[in-house]
Image (spheres, rainbow, N blue to C red):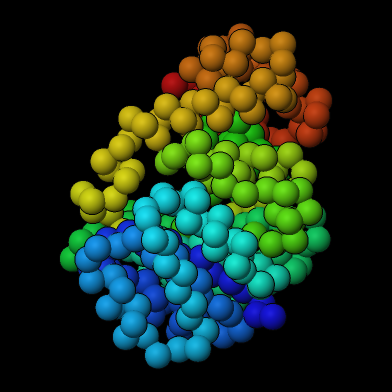
Length: 275
């Protein structure tokens, strides 16, 4: 059984695939399996995968296009590692990524999922801005009431935590399938983010977040309203999500009653109030 199973789903993305595969197979943590789910690609993707000579690579071929969530679920069902990591087919994992994230999870039994910061990577390979997510269980949970608390390609999760609670991606949520999954997982366990950028996130016109941003926003809102309602049923979730001062204050009080007070959370709430 490998320590880490890395899941990478690909559909017609041969242009950057070799670099993504190489970034996983050259990690300083070598006890891993790389599971690539080829979602019925019609470009050179099968050829790129066929050129990889590494016994740690397993390719699962979808006979018809299933979409990201269903493809990742197929990968999860096949995974045997203690931990499961994600990477997109056009991104790059920095060399120490898996080692650092495994150390984080093994150092705290309460934390079952961790992400990291990311650095933008353009089509020519030039690095751009660094983006960070909240750190610490409470700030991360507060953020998860409004949006995904992780950059999806950076996540490492304890596979047993997913199995214990029967958690999988829900294809119904399309481009927000990750936000939905992490929100449900955080109902049972803690999460965190490493401050270091451990993934180079490719920015190009062909990616789903660029093409279908309106769809992603719609499903993000749907998950957020559900999570706000779960934490504070008495709050007008729509108003809180849109930044209403009275409803945000009520939501903060309900959140602190459930999870305890945190200066970082209060600072985040104050920032939302003054927007």
